[in-house]
Image (cartoon, rainbow, N blue to C red; front, side, top):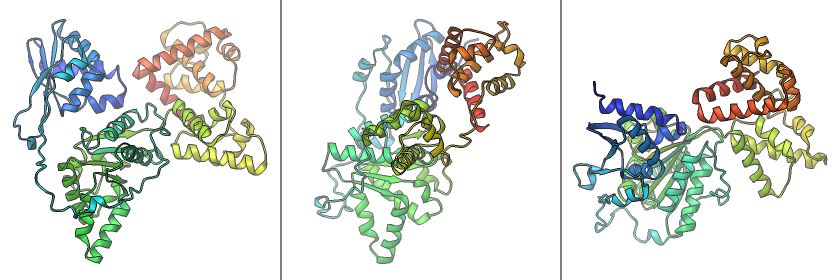
Length: 476
């Protein structure tokens, strides 16, 4: 029985999912749907031309191999690209992915999408002469891309931000929604985009405003009977950066006025950048018509930075402040403070302040002493015995078997993870770790740690196991 187009595409997705980061998969592959399968040609539908170009530039090799694995060497992929009906074209056009996987060639085949805005029509809402005014963008000049450290936690959002800064209003990232928890850098990234736009095109009218301030301005305009001036001002902007849009919840009249401002800007090819603590689908108290517009562009989340990114953030701050700290202190702070970037930088400032006030050099002992307000259970050292016990409980294997000579797969896995975590979470030497786990030498520990690191990068289930155990260690 022949497979349907959906079955073939789902099989492709399973392979793709195991070869790219989860966030990239969610952003670039989950919105795709399979349309038809004719012979060896699979047709998929993508939301926009930009989507198609991004896939061709970044994932064409993976797509080609995956399709050929499912359909054979003659397997081929075609895209059905959705074109906005407002542009005047009723049906989407289709283009083929080149069989040689040349992403650059694919891009030359793409056709421009007609723009629906009639630029000969004057906008009656723009106040005459407003563009000649010197509008303060309300941006913090310290928020730039140069001091926004890139990591797996923010790579997609940062890349999208660069694209928007280079061509505001000219990409499919409109609006660009940046969302994530407290202190993960949403405001920094949003303002970095604004600062980059002003640097590249000083004449652009860019405005940064928090949702709370926007709501208050709207209330004031109602009181002062200046609602038209309020609307005209925001509709005249080239770029609006709206921070914390989740604060629109329950404010129906303000949502209504922003809805009309948003529509005007979007239809005029102007850029809208939004930040929120939740993804659009999880925002409560907002009108459905406004949420639907938030979903038009790209929603990119900011996650908690990993250890390497946290270390890089601290080193960047140290360099900016012209200070040097011992590597073990930096690693200690980065390892123990993993909630958010704001708390991480706050801990470093606190440490520097305590060192200056007490006239003491910063070492590991001072760091442990001074950061008790930031780090829970700093005095409790994690032992190899405890790590071994936790790992064995997690995998449901006997503790004594981990130290034995058995080569059973589940025992070897528990032993290697225990060695890896002992190296990461204790001060024990490789020789001590090897001796503890059945009298093995340091080279065995090195091999075990390397094996675990390789599996973390290539095996999603294995990575989830290790992450779960590490969370239990931090909670203990």
